[in-house]
Length: 137
Image (cartoon, rainbow, N blue to C red; front, side, top):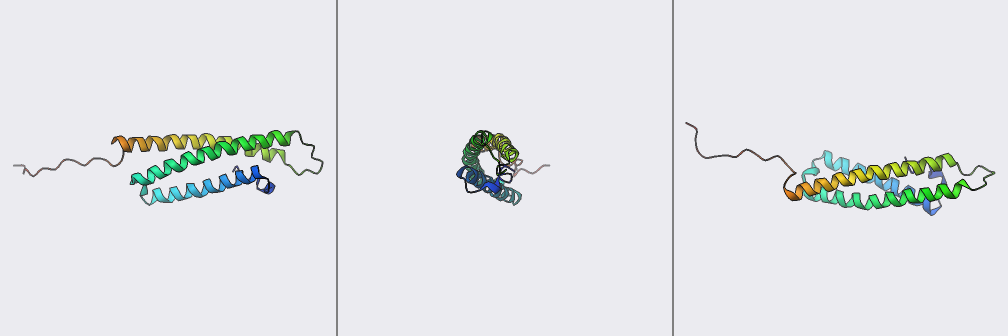
């Protein structure tokens, strides 16, 4: 949603970074959804990779939101007689960037909790019942 509202303004580095972050985040999310649907979520390595990707994209989304806030402040004072800048699209993109950053923060915290639970033995698969060789009489 963030990149869709400003895609017509590509060519400006701040907008291009917003498009990059949005598209790669969408691809990353789809890849992890498919991986988890295929059962890869039981693999501790996949969970750790997800946490690492979440951390990296958390920084990307923070930078994207800051870039879009900068664009909003730049565009607000510009006299635009030809209507090149749709200020509402820029503002919407900025708002969605901050919302996405907040949601990505939540996702990163949940990934951290999952990694922490797996390392402490509190997560993962359910333990199986103990078996015995003693026959019940």
